[in-house]
Image (cartoon, rainbow, N blue to C red; front, side, top):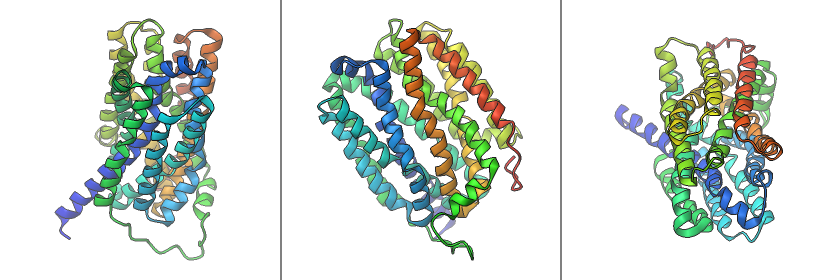
Length: 398
């Protein structure tokens, strides 16, 4: 195969993996713009509505580590096809739920299906991109969250007005068909490297990860980062509606945040390199600026200023993720990269599990959405403080 064909194939594989990961966020965050309408129909409060997000994350977290082990041992292509198919079915089932409890069950199962996807996508990146190029490939892959959130906030409000919230879930589920076709056509099976002598078994990747205290420090800092990152996506629209803006206007604010995040994530690796910064330094500076912009966002109360600050907030909010993931993969090595990333993502997503419940409680007890953003800013600072304890890797993952 020619060099040009190899180059083309890796970008098509990356595109397919990015679409698969994007669908998990589209399916997950379609709920946010529909939240107010469903709250009225089912007569539920903000805490209960937040549980729909937490239910997804509960399932998502359960399958993170099994997904990483499978990605290191099996073929990521087929894992992604099966998981995407099941995720599409679960998204369609949301159109048929007869009550609040049934919806919780469907969201948990959808999360279980989606939890195996990120590690398989990352394995495709590490298999197709040389070490020096992986931050670029990983940055594009990690643009999936804001792409999915952008699509959810642009598509869902319009579909809701046209076909209702149930029809919205039904139409969103069709995105899975496109993803599956791309995975079949463009992702090639990954040649399996021989296992290291004396390290046979399914759980050696877990041992490698948990014996490295620096991985734990990195993941705890990332927990704080993800708590705030997904917090905006869950509550940004509802915050805008709290002082009279429409769901569509709230969706535009979240979309501005997401567009900035997409651009920032895609160029995060190259930007750090151009500035001559290590992964660690760039990551922590971006996290500190994320906290500052979050606090400023909480002071805004007009449509225009919320969009403007949302753009700044969104850019800073998606700069760190590439570097968290790249650092985890470098420390684990290629043999266990998917397992390491899945464990890190499990810790990250546990923040997404508890965040809607905690923030829902704050809102229900104070009746004030503004205070949430100052709370988020403090969480960012905690992430910076923890990240400062992270030591440079012997493999130049500074």
